[in-house]
Amino acid sequence: MSNNIFCIGELLIDMVCVDNKGLKNGEKFEKKAGGAPANVAASISKLEGNAYFLGQVGVDFFGKYLIELLEDLNINTEMAVSKGSTTIALVGIDENGERNFDFLRGSDGEYSFENIELSTIDKGDIIHFGSATGFLEGELKKTYFKLLEHAKANNIYVSFDPNYRDALITDDKLKGFVEDSISFLKASDFTKLSDEELLLLTNEKDITAGVSKLHELGVKVVTITLGSKGTYLSVNGENEIIPSIKIKQIDSTGAGDAFVGAVLKQVADIEEKQSISFEKWKDIITFANKVGAITCTNYGAISSMPTLSDLDSLKV
Image (cartoon, rainbow, N blue to C red):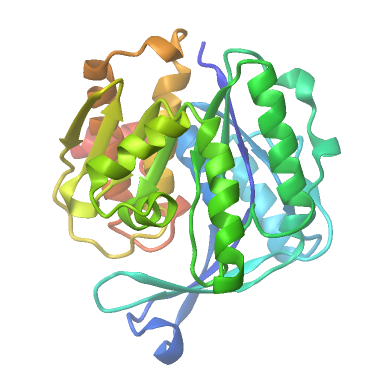
């Protein structure tokens, strides 16, 4: 029986510009479910893992839509809260399939630690902290740190993805974001960063040097996503770039979250999580690269994530 994975953070509406003109010039938008930790939970569940979502949406129609969507995906929402208004992310896609963002923040930042039933989290479970909004000032940030403290006190496996968004983390907030991210990296068993985030958090342009700094902080397993090049994997002094598969990219929204979900689903199936060999980690990342790549082949994060049967039918 696979262990549970608890994903905390924002669940929101992505209004995605689908005419490849970006936010400024775009005219056609489609409503999609989004939010980094919710995306991770969706990837886990679509791959037949056990995911919980911890966070807050509005009592509006968007909030009802989002909770129903998660429940339809068999994601446990018992500790999710409906109150206030739903956060909306405006996502522009340019001619290269890359993204630009604006945010209309609702009540996701008001999620309180008191809503978490700690007795449901067992020692063999995983807590994933992944959020574009988790380190913005508010109750959610306090909840993040309290849950991290609980995880470390009880030897629960911690996954962290900083999900840096320059539309949210303005210059005056950057120093605090870096400091908060480092606090979580120090306590992380697994982390996934982009090369941009690696530079931001370590001040190192060289990937090997930056990853070494992360290990010095205390991170046990480091992955750096490199787009079509694959993923740089570093564990216990061993490192290697694990290649991805070739696809025609349409929208990269949620690809990193799909990757993380695929990693965590596999790790949850393993009892001795701290003793996974480098060869096994290479297999885990190879599979996760495929899941992330396929997510890029359509618009919208959750709707584009493959199931196990999709992967079988695609023979990847």
